Image (cartoon, rainbow, N blue to C red):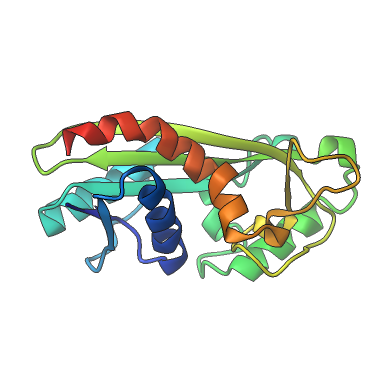
Length: 197
């Protein structure tokens, strides 16, 4: 059975394929090649639903859509829904990361707490809609590290690592990230709902 992932981001497609394969090997996640809807929601849930509805309508398949971002406590939860556009409308991941680091340059480690949030919407061609959320708590490093992951991964240090051995997600293997990530946590909440497919 196929489900379309409402994104043109190949990194997200690969990540979802890996997550889904471990829990629902009968479910094939396919990329979306249709028009991008305007994401004018002010919450992750609103934007995820906008994307999932558009993809399901365009393809006739059940659609999953993820809206995710990094939420920094000292910035009042920003960048949040604006994570992909933090440095402007070009969706420049490197510029977004550099701007966030610059904004936090004088903020000490105890106040650099943050979390990744993933909100996943599932929309079926029959009109059923479900939304789940996964959060991955941690803090932000003062500089980027590692060549893995994408987006803000190279500056995000997840909680729960042994003292003195902490790494950013940029230093994680793909398997390590998939086991812990905000998307994996949201998808775990979604798995029971996939029974409707």
